[in-house]
Amino acid sequence: MNRDLYKRPFTVDDPPDYNCPKCNIGLLRIKENSFEEFAELDAKEMQNKHELDPDWIDYIFHCIFECNNHKCASKVVCTGRGNVDFDIDVDEFGSQLQYWYSDYRPLFFHPNLKLIAIPEDTPADIEKLLNQSFELFFTSPSAAANLVRIAIEGILTDQGVEEMRNLHRRIEKLPEKHESLKTKFFALKWLGNAGSHSDNELSLDDTMDAYEMVEYVLSKVYYSAPDNLDKLAKEINDLKGPKKRVFL
Image (cartoon, rainbow, N blue to C red; front, side):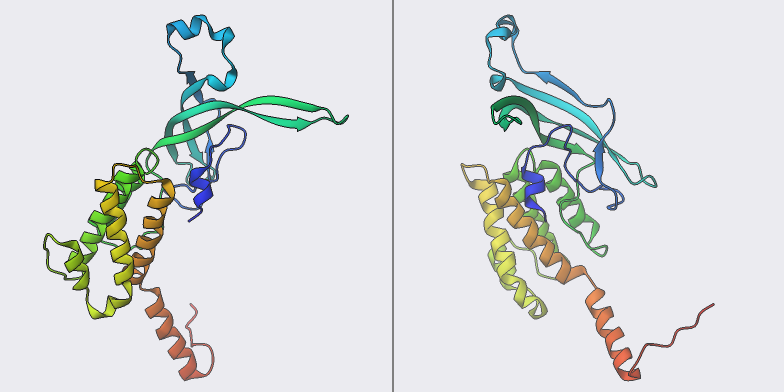
């Protein structure tokens, strides 16, 4: 996954390249005239607004993202926070110029972004848990990681591992065909535990560690293309050339 995409703030003139969660083909772009921001100042601060440096001002914002794939054109509502920052540029005479700009960090998307690829054969209850995790990712990485932990419990159940309170023991009972995945399951368990019990909020990177590992697990458990490719390769090798096709 593109970690920088989900961690960096954005400006209205330079929107992030979020994939459309519906078609997964187009990119989301801020719909014209949909972006609104509101300074988080109380009445007294508003009276003294002229005394404030711009970088003391925080905003809340909302906007509508729209898929740029004209066959889709889906809408996604986004809310978040913003602040004013400055940068230094140099003009044609070599003089430094300071300019101010606003940047924004998302906190919530509806419908949620699809932060990893989920194979089509993934059970619906597991996919639902992961989408709930994606909803919380920007506001609470810890809660998002804990939902990934619950999702791996679902994967274990789906793979025939008996239910018990001790997740560590359940992972140890993974079928032999998934032996190579145990280390990923254990890592996901520890990240989920930290999300549940740690006094410190997990970072976005911590939760993205969990997403990358669960994406790998899902690809090994539920993605069937490699088997199909093995069958296709055997057929081509047996024929010593391309397979015979009937064209209508």
